[in-house]
Length: 171
Image 1 (cartoon, helix red, strand yellow):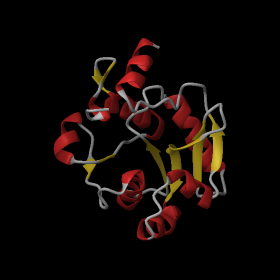
Image 2: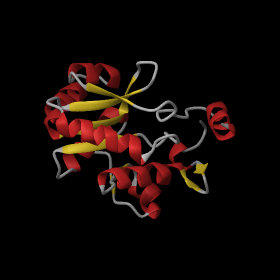
Image 3: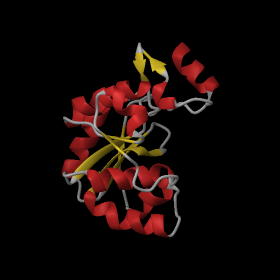
């Protein structure tokens, strides 16, 4: 992308603020995982990554270690199409599930491990994956036998390149 995706301007605020508002509306609170110096100005608590340079797996591990609740909603910062309604549906599904993880699933059948609800019981599996250097999140959610919650088209769109960002903005 060439710049911090979380800080891209979206509807007049940083993209991460849009995502955080949806999370707060659905879950009641928000904690960001990242550099407190970089994201502290946003007004949310920021927890430094306990295992930096391990990608999303390290961030989810950090989030679950910092959490005081059993179920934890995890959402990537680069999903401009996400909404509180989608996240509430995920949380509702997790509350009824007997599994340790519920992921959002797009209309093409692709699961999104970075829009999911993880139970703290996932921590040993995450720790093992970190130890064994198994960082592919899609493999991890299979290992967790995650349940899927189909979500509305476009909710899971993420932006990884300037071209994708421009395409999303032009919508």
